[in-house]
Amino acid sequence: MLLDSQPRIRLIGGETPLEPAERLSRMLGIPLCFKRDDLMSLGMGGNKVRSLEFWLGEALSRGCDTILVGGLPQSNLCRLTAAACAKAGLSCIIVHNAAQPAHGSVPQGNALLNRLMGVQTLYCGPVDEHRRMDFIRQQAASLGSLGKKPYIIGDPVTGALGYVAAALELCAQAGRLTLQVPLRHIFISASAGPTETGLLFGLCLTGGVTVHLVSVEYDEATFWSIADEIFAGLEQRLGIRPPLRPREIARFYGQYLGNGYGVPTPGALDAVRTLARAEGIFVETVYNAKVLHGLLDQAHQGALPPDEGVCFYHTGGTPALFGQAAQFMEEI
Ligand SMILES: *Cc1c(COP(=O)(O)O)cnc(C)c1O
Image 1 (tube, rainbow, N blue to C red):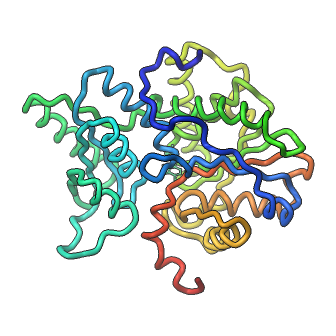
Image 2: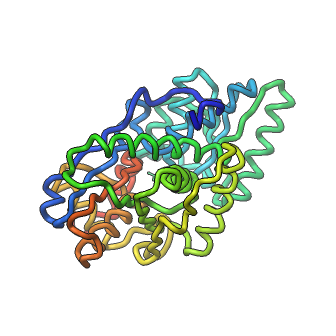
Image 3: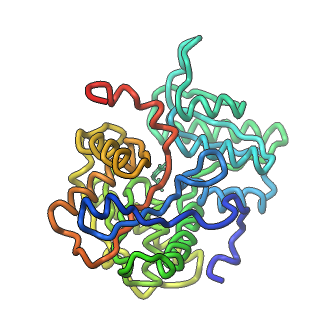
């Protein structure tokens, strides 16, 4: 169908669960369910696996043999790229924009998993994303001169294809879920763009759902300038113009971001505990805890009608929680 013409490898096997959150629903007075993209068999799961189906599909279709990926030491993207490369039999090089860790320091969370997978890891110092990409391009060029065929992970339109697929999967599942009411609201993080823009694209095709975008990184104008470009790229790539426009089906929240990307807020830390105690489910503090804080706060304010189904889209990243222990030290 829609995505059949796009190169893809299969990394997920089937659907991720869509399940009711019964105790939290009762506490909030709204019918709530969770889309569990934290539950996948590969590499402890997460949203990046859906994008990697298309990134690695593209890499293989171009005959590439060495995958380069950049991120911070606790990047979920780097961990899942390494895992997907292990499964696909590709070599993987991770570039962290951080200082080389001190000799003998103990890796935590995603850094530990990367170590266990034995991927080559380079450190380009504490520079911004643009300087990191310059460094990755230099590495790719020198691999090319050695006869390798490098592929750099990260094209946002290719990555977004995974979440066009996820939107269609979620709509099909919602029709089967016994929430008693139709699914009308989805809460998800607004960050670098591929995940939420792919989801918006799919839901602009189907209609009927409002996407609540909780910022974990950018202000609204910056976010939309990124998302609009990815959306237009998807229209071009797939040769289809959805009848709805993304802003018509979205609401953006900047008020749960706090002091910026990766900086925890008291509300987010509380949300981690609330979810753990109500449902026995865990979220990390960079992405999902801020989204959950937004959902809890909107529900408490009465902004979500009691007869409309709400979905919290869990994008994974849970191994990062083990690198975040110090954030919870005041009151665990
Ligand atoms: C990367 C990531 C996101 C954000 O996805 P984008 O497509 O970059 O917006 C959300 N949640 C988790 C756990 C992530 O690792």
